[in-house]
Length: 388
Ligand code: PLP
Image 1 (tube, rainbow, N blue to C red):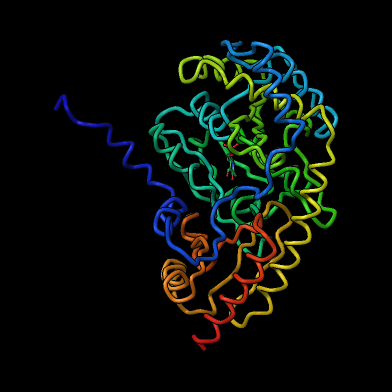
Image 2 (image 1 turned 90 degrees about the vertical axis):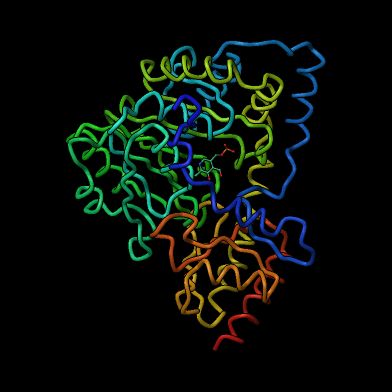
């Protein structure tokens, strides 16, 4: 019938994180570990650069791909930090956050009926976006015993002739797992052998601990042309509300992304792009400062969780999330989280918000204050001791 709506929109479920967020919104006295958002404000030099851009009249449409100054700054950063050369003219596009960069690159690559390998547990938009494109998400487990990262044998088993794209998220939300060089080499070999693309979501690349090293898959020989690298200013520079991210790949793929970006948004907010130029070219002390804070809080929350009877937590290699095993509570993660809200005034994200492989876990963001961590751990400890 002419008045029906697109059923694929409903096939893409809403984020359960938002459901939790809405459930507790406006309630008093809760201790919250909910959103994946730095609790720092954007650095003053970045804000000043955006203000200056507004005053200088940078208030008009710009190229779909973004201002050249930002693409050049991204190209320099990628050469310096990630050892990959992306041509600022043809191989980089600035998007409205990592979220739009991911959506556009999926649209550029995925055809109806394609299979897309998705990490499990996953950042919840991945499978939803795949379904919106009439394609099939194939969730590949990344279990605790595998360090919460892909095991190459599981990946190998999941590949079929219809596999078009593999999503790699390292460091990974929600688990904090990271791909090491050996795994990246194995993924590269598999992608070449079975001829599929890889989307490498690297938005947490700057939040890495204990001497772990983030390596970009596209820096491996022969991988630049079959990898779409996505990054963002949100997490590294505490710029979540600015909505600036970027996608980099072969010129052929970026041409498609630009076309889609023109149709969807025309270009990314221009003063925000000037702020992003300053983020990359200005003083990086703020990045080091935030990493130092997260490093300290990570130790505090992981040690605290491991001291609670019935809870255990592997220290995340990267990100600002602790993914705690709560199987000792003998209930599903959804019930656990609802009871924590009602009986302890504590809000964490149930692992099933990240798909079936997240069951038995809860995610706690440690991009929160020390006081929140201390009080949250106390409440969790009290709740668990009442259970036993
Ligand atoms: N990728 C992952 C794994 C994320 O966790 C997020 C945000 O939480 C994003 C991408 C998108 O971030 P943004 O759109 O703010 O750049």
